Image (cartoon, rainbow, N blue to C red; front, side):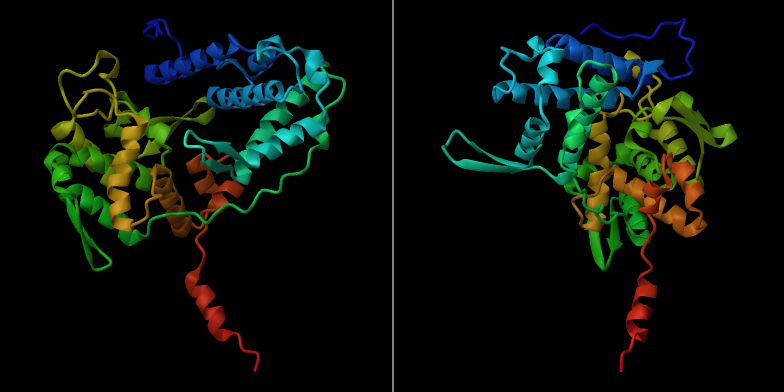
Length: 377
């Protein structure tokens, strides 16, 4: 793949690193067209051509396309469509697909077995949410085919309804755990629930070079509720210390100003002045905010996840802690403090208040009072 650079004549106010990432994803989508049938290529173009000609974002278009390709490959494997490869599939082949065929595919994705190299039968199982997503992708494709007169009927309307389970409880850090996590990042040790928690000897070797960076990253999540991609794309030019805010780019190309907390601003200033490498940074990452101390390039998504886990898992004991759980921590705290779910919804960039509603913390004190008060004597 050729190196991607952004033209000096670019009139968009979207940072170059965001534009380059989108182009990389678009190239991945284009590469899928090479082995796709013409009818699917038309659907892919309906989903996404570029940022001004799209139905969904580039990540979603990639996920939808990959799921449909898996389905088409299964149809050929099961000889429901008798073509040598998916590239040969045409609209008549799809017109002949029945609801039973689609349902059979979805049911086969729920749980299945394969024989491994040792001759053992290995059981695989997908969650209901995974099946729901696969079903949604296929429904979307066949609905588009039907609305555009490529097929005579939409067989997906006959599919069995998938009842999705309730979302699992939100995992978030307690106030004490947040304090301990930040203390661990700053000093290399902390105390939580009468236990002393320390970084390992190996972790302490690099701690003096990364503590302000790590503090800034952690505070961006728990004080501002950023998504990991929003943090990943932050640049030096995103920060306006004199005006007390920084810019982020959210889903659907939305640029938003976020106002610094005192803690985050202090951590960032310390990081930039005392830790952030000044030399030998890869040319394309000179404006990147968070830099790897070893490679001197923008911290990757994976590296950011590792940093969060290093501290959050140690203080909580929960291996499921992730950047998104720190965002959940911010959401839970923001609702608790403000009591205004709609303002928190806007701050988090949720499209629906139902999503934000999940972060309402159950009132444990109230539940205990009810349990003690109920009496049937």
